[in-house]
Every structure is written in C-alpha cells, then in structure tokens.
Image (cartoon, rainbow over all chains, first blue to last red; front, side, top):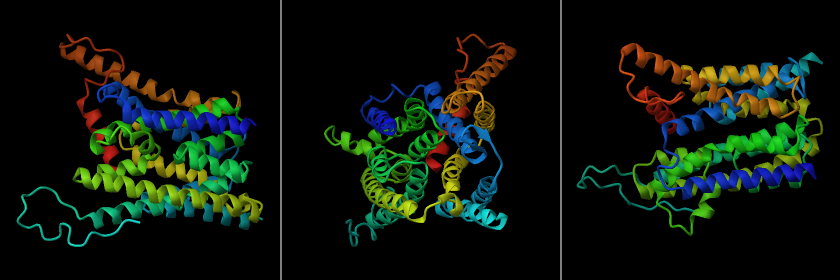
Length: 102
Length: 276
C-alpha cells in the first residue's frame, strides 16, 4: 500500500510541474535566481542519489563491485560513449567483478 | 508512423537564407534519441523489480510518471526503506526541472490550450533537447512529437520486459543490474558539471548525502543534500556583493544569492541546457 501511495504522490506531483511549465505565463519563472535554483537542484539531487546508490546498502556505507562499475561508467562518459554504452559498462563491470570475486 | 516527406525542402536554393531542415531529418534525429533512451527503460524495469516493486507497480510508474530520473529516485528510496512521502518528495524535486522545460517549450511550440494537458506528459529532458535543437517551429513540433511518442512507447515496453526479466533471472545483483540506477544518474549528471558552481553543489551534496545516511531516516539525507544548491547560490551572491562593494558601485540593492552581478552565470546555464 505504501508503494502505491508513493507512486500516486509522485505521479500527481511530477505531472503538475510539467503542466505548470506549459501553462504559466512566461516571466513568472524567468527570474534569474529561480532559474539558477532550478538548474542546480537536480545537480544536488542527482549527485547525492548517485553516491548513495553506489556506496551504500540501505543505511550502511559500503564499498563493493558497484563502485568499480560506476568508475567504468565514468570512464565511458569521459570517452563520450552513448547513453546505453555508459549503463552497459557499469552493469558488465559490476557483474564481472562479482563473478571473479566468487 | 511518421513518413518522410519527399522533396520537402531539399532544393530550396532560391529560398531566402532562413534555416531549413527536411522533415525526414527531424524525424531521424528524434527517433535516434527516442530509441536510444527508450531502450534504457529495460534498466528501470529491472531496477524497480529488483527493489521489490511488482510488475504492475513498475509499469504504472513508467506509464504515469514518465520522467526517468524521478522514477529511479523513487524506487531507490523505497528500496532503502524510505517512507512513501519522503521518497515521493525526492522524486518530485527531481521533476521540478520539467516545469522550466515546459516554460520554454510553450513559447517554442505555441500549442493550443486544449492540447497542453496531453503534451505536458511528454515534457522531459529528451523531448526538450530535441525540440530546442530545431531551426523552425514546424521542425520543433515534429521533433517534440516524434521523440515523445517513440520514447513513451519504447520506455513502457522495455520497462515491462525489464520487470518480467528481473523476475525470470532471479538475483539481479549477480548480473550487476543494481549498477544501472547509479549509472543512469551519473550519465544525466555529467553534462551538468561544467562550471565550478555545479561541481561545488555536486560535491557538497555527495558529502551530505553519504554523511547523513547513517544518522537520519531513509530518504531524508537526499532532501537535506538538495540544500547544497541554495547554499552555493547564497555564497556566490555574497561574493558578488563583496566584489561590488570593493569596486564601490554597490548602489544597487542586491539580495543575497542574486546572480544579477554575474551575467555569465545565466548565459552559461542556458547554453548548457541547449547542449543536452
């Protein structure tokens, strides 16, 4: 039930902000500070989420094969690889390290 | 499906030098993005099912929420034991950027009011990137529609396949599929890290997100980490004030965190968006 509540709340929230952008008269969201904040909030959230999902299991910090997988993804990004290749690199390296480690 | 329009604008040499682009070229660009990103719905399906959501819940997310980063954030937070509202809050804040995409798209596409509630569902990173890259309104509309349609259909199909596949192959961790989520986040984040400001925000957010993880309830550290954004903006604004004061021309009433002092910041940010 909890999961359905989360899905419903996310659906409503995410749809309304999309619609708001299309309906709001230009200018309301055009203040430089507001635009700046909108650009920086995803940076903060994505960085925190990436770190948590790569270096934590639940509420415990841990360093495992995923960290190496993410390093592979970072290298692929630096080499300007396409989106799917970046994800593939992370998955393959993580699986490979786990297979080797036993 | 869309068809190539033969000879639409290929021989327009006499036409004035307005930027032209054949419809078929727009469709090709749009399909390229739609297919490449649409296929990564597979990674979402697997991640979501691996996080303990049912196939139905996983598919509902892709059908209803349809903004990848928010979906990954939600299932990640739920898997970490977050309560539904903190989990939804994190996903919501990630979706806020779509409001700003919509603001630009509404001027660019000039959609009739009746169409907007439907078009809104497709206002995401990829449709915005493709639409903004087009030279004319007609091309932007085609780009938006083709990207939106192909991405929506494929994203939902591959979500279903991924969710079913995750059940079939059992332990998704053994296949390294738990690395797909953070890799998606990293791929979305990387193009945003061009200036010192963005890097500072990311670094502080990582420290807050990891450092507070053991001491705060699940889901809350990410929300606290979001404060890195206003914090860095505030410091930037203070620096701007100091510079203005040193020059002795601080006559203007500059609020903390206001970026008017640094005209470059807004322009850089705009070009970044268009690059995506």
